[in-house]
Image (cartoon, rainbow, N blue to C red; front, side, top):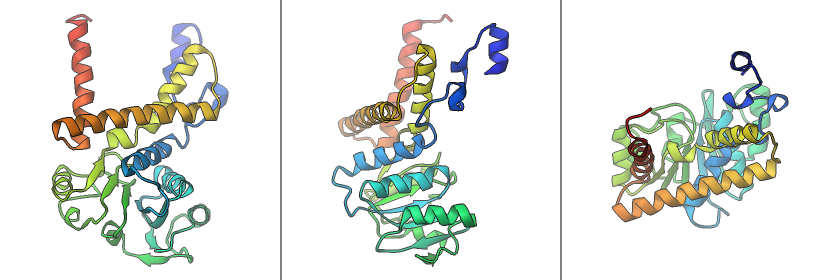
Length: 256
């Protein structure tokens, strides 16, 4: 931002997002991706979150807060994993307590209030929602047939391979794709840019309302197209995205 502003001759805070608040950043940016995952998951459920069981693979910046937000909404987070290990409690994990343990110990391993389990076993749990929020390619052709969750909400980028995606679709598992489910961070970056352009600052409540509205509008558009054309949510999301870019090119012509 500083370098761009020096070359422009005046301050241009909107050229970069994710800034500290004192430099024109936005409230709500830190947990925006996780909040978007929660919004997408609850929208895809289409029912009350009370008692809905959730397993979260990855307990970092996205996974930990996504688990917390889902638990706050009434879901029961029964399993969590990170690079150090995995823990499970069918009665529900106290996510806030687990986050405190991770902040102190560096990982979920050794958390005494839940049972240790193998990383791979988390994917095979009989839960309502599975949130892969760690590395790319976590759900593969090898483990996809054993996934029992009826809803997969992608918190990570590219956690499902194309081969696994086809298997999940054939098995009737709904996958809310990363391009939609983890868009919360990008949306609040956009909202930060808008605030910078307008030289204003919105409250955290206003940011959350705008994030929720944009996420739900996108979700409704994707699900409507998927139902209309018999597509998966991933296919529908990409059809919409590519169509918008193509239409913009057609409208503008060859120049610029």
